[in-house]
Figure 1 (cartoon, rainbow, N blue to C red):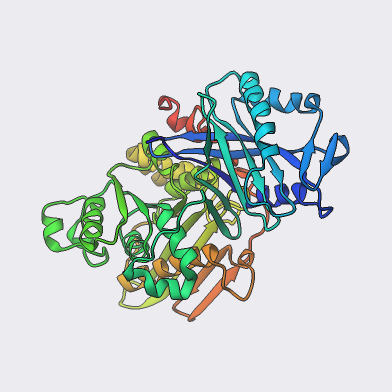
Figure 2: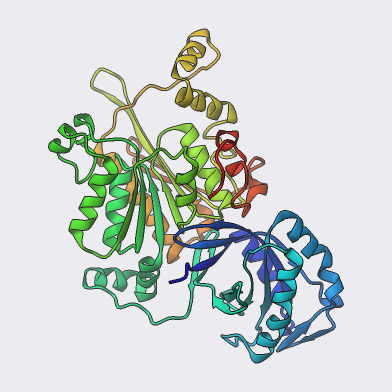
Length: 467
């Protein structure tokens, strides 16, 4: 069985492509996508890095069912792809809505794709895709033997989450998901069954996120957690018992065992290692969606970077419960952040600065040096452990999963762009959404870069080599 190949775009890239390919004149148009990659063991992901439209006025033919252009015009684009080692995907429109590749498309790809492969001179995939008037897409890639293979999925990580899977018979709705289908339609349930979701952190907020995703019928879940169960956290980790604490069972193992007992068909992959490991990054980067259930600054920065480089939608959960130490509570609150590649980040939203990331990294890699810098006053505001309560964690987890569903199947009165983050306060009993605004200066230019050396452009991974 060959490894499936997918194509991923950011919301901004999809908007740009739709504007280029569907100008409203009823004629076909064309663009070239230059793509980074994640060459994985479960799937290969092509990640759009650059969109290059072919100007309408230089096209030699533009009709409702055909478009051609001078080959010389694309030479500089292909040279750039060759210099950077990027895959090339040609995309054109079918303004009439023809839902498959035409015989004209077949002839054109048979000439174009071998030429691109010869130009790039690397054993990497190149392909072709079509955009329909509603913005949906389908595509294919050329294999080394010259045969064509359909893209198993094309996805867009924007305000809304869009997934167009290879044309295949829809899966039957399992009995346990029948009520979900009534609420979100059978198409949403089918998409859930085909998705791979990573949950990083399987403790207070991570375990209820995992529980909900599995019971919603998610197809695959990758659990990243390197800690074991202790008696102090049995009070908030779903499916854990005191015997797990006595036996120091892995938190990931406890969740995986619970998923197996449920028997709902979710495939589970456990990674009992820290996220700051290049191999873990590469495994998570093969997923479709990421949930971050961590409380460390450097871990959240790392996930935000990963989601940008590998064009993934990222849901970040943060919870804070402030007690006064005398039995009183000052505030119970939390925030669900939705981060889409190429837009704002946790840094540009003001959650933390790069100085905080550096301090957290020092704490992780050299605790003694971190302690000295805190004592000497070089690091300020170092947070100690905060109280944690299962009812608050489960509220945050539920809000995060519902945020995911609202973007997979938009149903809110206002556009999803108005809900880049949702703050909840139990002290004031409020839900406070904030809109998506701006582009992160630090990560905005890294969408779709994929596998690089060093990984994610971080020196922490300099000594590790890509697989």
